Length: 90
Image 1 (cartoon, helix red, strand yellow):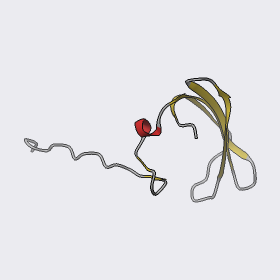
Image 2: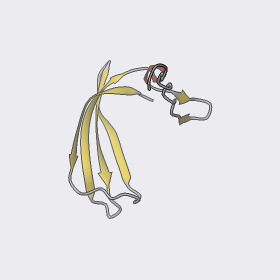
Image 3: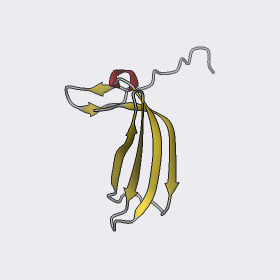
Image 4: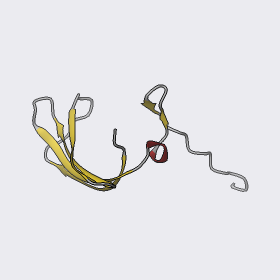
């Protein structure tokens, strides 16, 4: 699997995107070089209409340098932000 950090992402919204509705996303890599790859994708409404499309450029990077990933459970997780220091605030 190729992992990357977004360098550029252009999105065109073509139709309103509803909430609480199952949607389909299709993405593909369209170009790959030694350090950069490019991709495109579409967001489909339930009737098959394209609601949004996008094109992006990404820099290849090791997953461990990009995000927290639990490889054993094969899932992403959110690491809580540290609590801000409140000492001296009134």
